[in-house]
Each structure stands twice: as C-alpha cells, then as structure tokens.
Length: 319
Ligand SMILES: O=P(O)(O)O[C@H]1O[C@H](CO)[C@@H](O)[C@H]1O
Ligand SMILES: Nc1nc2[nH]cnc2c(=O)[nH]1
Image 1 (cartoon, helix red, strand yellow):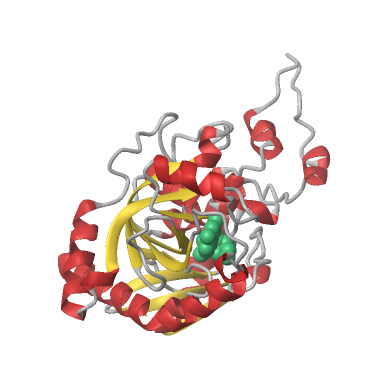
Image 2 (cartoon, rainbow, N blue to C red):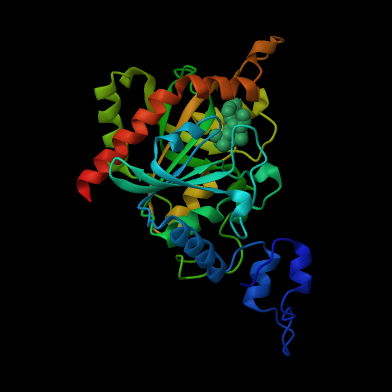
C-alpha cells in the first residue's frame, strides 16, 4: 500500500519526488494532485469484494436525502467510510457515509449512502474516486442521483429530471476529476463525453414513469454542477437558463466524467427539491435552503426508490 491521505504524506512518501534527472515521477505527480494510483484503488476494491463476498454489477450514488435508495438492498453488507482504507469521510447532512453492498432485484449492487462534494474541501479526483473503486469491483452501470434546484420554469418541486446531458461549470473553470497523469488502465487521456447518458436507460426510465403513473412529473433535461456551497444568485441562474440548463446542483458531473472515462454505462436523475427564483424578490421562502432540500427528498424517496428498483429489474432481464 502506497498509503497517503494528505500533502504531508506526499513529502514523507517514497522520496522519489525528483529522480536523478530532476524530473518528478508519475506517482509523485499523482500524489501531488491528490489522485489515487491504480494500485491503491485496486486495494480498496479488493477490501470491499473480499469483505462482502460480492462483485456488484450496478453502482448507485444516493443524493442528498436519498439515502433510502440503499435501504432497498437485500442481505446488505455495510461498510462505514471511516473503516474503509484510504476512503474519504462524508461531512454533509443527509449523506450517512456508508457503502452498502448486496442484492437488488436479483442484481448485485453497491450503493454509496453519501457522496463527496468539491465544497467539502476534497479535490474532484477524490470526490469521484469511489467510481473507480466501483469499476474495479466489477460495476458496469452507474446510477447517480442528486437533489437539485429547478431552473426550467416548467419544473415543480418534487419532479424528477432524467439527465440527458450536463454543463460542467467547474470544467469551464479548468477543474476536472481527470486532471493530472492519465492511467490508461482506467481510460483514455481525452475521453469524449457526447452520449454520456445512456439513451436506452433513459427510455426505460420514461416507460417506468408511465407504468408508475408519474410521467407528467418526469422530465428529461440538462444538469449543471457548480462548486457550491453557496446557492446561486439570480444573475447566475439567469445565465444558466440561457445556456440551456434545466436543473442545478453541486455534484454528479465529476462522477459521470469518471464513469465514462472507464466506460461505464451511466443513468442519472435529479430530484427537483426547490424552484430557483429568477426574479429579484425580498421573499425569504424563495431562497434555497438545505432543510427544504432534505424535506422534499424525504417526501419523494418512495417514488425515487421505485424508479431505481424497476430500472434495476429491467437491467436484470438483459443480463
Ligand atoms: O447533489 P447532492 O449530493 O444530492 O446534494 C445537493 O444538495 C446540497 C445542497 O442542498 C448540495 O450538496 C447539492 O449538491
Ligand atoms: N447549486 C444548487 N444545488 C442544489 N441542491 C438542491 N437545490 C439546489 C440549488 O438550488 N442549487
């Protein structure tokens, strides 16, 4: 184990910061960028597969207040993040910090009850590192869920938006989970992101929403991730709307990028927990707040759980 967690570990690691030529080694550059070497991710994956006795096919990331998605899992083996070697810990309310491995609708799955956000102080590569762990555990499909503010005026609180594309605002600012040396065992240096969101899974989810009788509150749209932790200003929300963004949050995009880099099939949805104001107003109730986000997610978790279960059942048919 090359074990490191902080800048201090970099300085005290293997002393190969600069070789005889004065060049930094790839491993040193990886550590300097807070990326995780392949071997370290493999060790985390081995720990989880050995500890659970399961090789999951589907990985689920539970959004704020949507941790109950992991409660669907049968015969769960639960790993607290703090007990998993080299794993970050969750610091946000509504993100329990547990990894749950087991069976859902006859498929082996792994669910993160708690994700990592950039605003928590973690670099993007660290936020999305668990996606690579999932990959090395055997995961082929990533289901990423989130709580988001609705910018599209047609969206109501409690609606679900199936993500078919994203606008990566952190990427515009030059920040990416793939920054730093590329390890081709995960994927290519320059991955393409068109068709990132699997069309077949979106269509299946639309059919499921019809079967559930909720199709009028299910949309297909564009998500944008901002760095947070502030919610947006009116001017920012207007700018995002002009760019074609339908819902805004502080997560998911870096996970999707990491998943597509290592060729996973991606399905993602946003639960619209608040309507974003695009007109100036003094009204307090038009301001986003995390308590409201959590309350709406709690209210709507049943529909979200059913959507996820049914989609997993559909995948099971095709395995
Ligand atoms: O994206 P998830 O983790 O669902 O959480 C969303 O809700 C929180 C803000 O209320 C932010 O963390 C935002 O990203
Ligand atoms: N950035 C952002 N994240 C959210 N998560 C839930 N609601 C919101 C929102 O309005 N903005």
